[in-house]
Length: 347
Image (cartoon, rainbow, N blue to C red):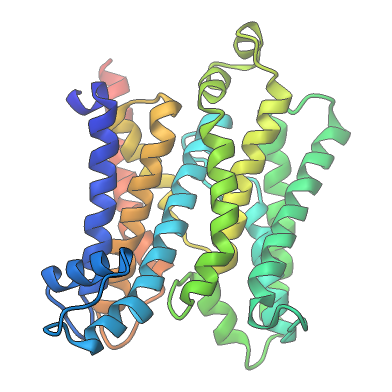
C-alpha cells in the first residue's frame, strides 16, 4: 500500500530492479565475473571512460560484446510483452488476455517460419530478412483483423475483436503447422525459433526492435487514462468523453506493434504478458497510468532473470527461454487465480 501511494518510489524501485537484474545477467555465466567488476565495466563504458589496468580485457569483451547485447534485448522483449499484456487485459476486459490473444503474434510467427522454411534472404536486408518480414506480416495481420471486424459491424466491440483474433490465430496457426510438417532439415531451426530465445542476436537486433518499442510504449502510456475508462465499458467511456473506436485502434496498434516486434526478434515467449501484469496489478493496483510503466520494469527484469536461468541451469546446453517462462509462469498464474477466486467467494 505504501508503494502504491508513492508513485516516484514505485518507479525508482522498478528501475533499480531492472538495473540489478542487468548486472546479474552480465556477471553470471560459464565465466563468472564479480558484480563489482561488472558494475565498473558498465559504468566506465556508459561514460566512455578508460578501463583501469586491473580490469581483464577478456572480461570487458565478454560483458560488452557477448552478454550485454543479449541482456538488453531481453530487457526490450520482456518490457514489450509485459506492457502489451497489461494493455490487452484492460482493453479486452479479460484477465486471461495476453499479447498473443488477437492473433498478431501468429502473423509474425508465420512470416518468420516462411523465411526459415524457404531460406529467403532479401538483398538489402540479409540476415535481417526474418525479423523485418516478421514485423511486416504481424502488422498486416492487425490490419486484416481490424478490417474484418469493420466488415462485421461499424463499431469495434471488444467481443468481436476477440472472436476475430481467435479465428485469424487458428487459421494462421494451421499454416504454421503445415509448414512444420513439410520441413526437412529446417525443422529443428523452426522449432527452436518458435520456443523463443534471445541468444546470438547482437546489438543489431536490439537496434531493429528499439524504434518499434519506443513508438508502441508511447502509444500505450499516452492512453493510460483512456484505458481506465474503457475498462468500465463502452457507454461509461463515451460519457467521459472518450472516442472509444479511435482509442481502441490506437491501443491495439501500440500493443500489437510491441508484440510483433518482440516475436520478430525472439520468437514466441509465453506467460510474460499474462503473469507479469497480474503480479504488478496485485502490488500496485489496477490504475493503468501506473500499471503500464511498472509492467515495463517488471517484465524487463523477469525476462533477464529467466534468460539467465535458460543459459545456466544445464550449462553448457541452453534451454529455450519460452520453456522456462512457461515452467515458472504457469504455476504462478495458477496460484494468483486460486487466491483471486477464493477471495471473491469470501467477499
